[in-house]
Image (cartoon, rainbow over the protein chains, first blue to last red):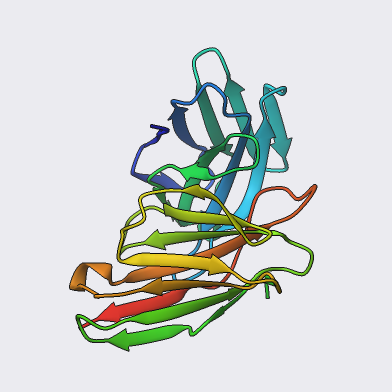
Length: 111
Length: 112
């Protein structure tokens, strides 16, 4: 069945450093890849997304890259700040139906 | 406020009982999704409804069922509850042209 693998499960960086989270998906029909941020005790919120016809997308300090051939996509956060500390989920969606989420990466940004 | 309303926010019940979780999607959204998040775990897809009809099913137990009503609100019914059903249950909705899902604040279910 469909599967999304996410690594690492935990990531600790120093404030100002970059953080990279990587995901791999199994369903080649997936064409939409959102990323969600979930702060402690709160709901997941969409932070950035990318469609399969685009290789890279950037929004201020965050960027996503997609390699359709390898079925890999990544989230890059530059100049990390303490408020970036949260759990980040990657996800893959096939044509508007169910979205399959990765297991999540807990990011700690040390001040 | 995301526009997706879930009630109740907290629920404590005993093993063997049955509960109903309710979700009202954002105005205009026809799709409703239910996810289960256990402690320190990811988001497990349970079920999706679109305009009243079941569209996709995930790893939803037979003890669990859901429906979406004509006014588009949805209910998730959990029966014969076990300790392991304790989790945060999220509802999300999406609509035409929308990027991603909008999640509600979740219902935290504790089975004792």
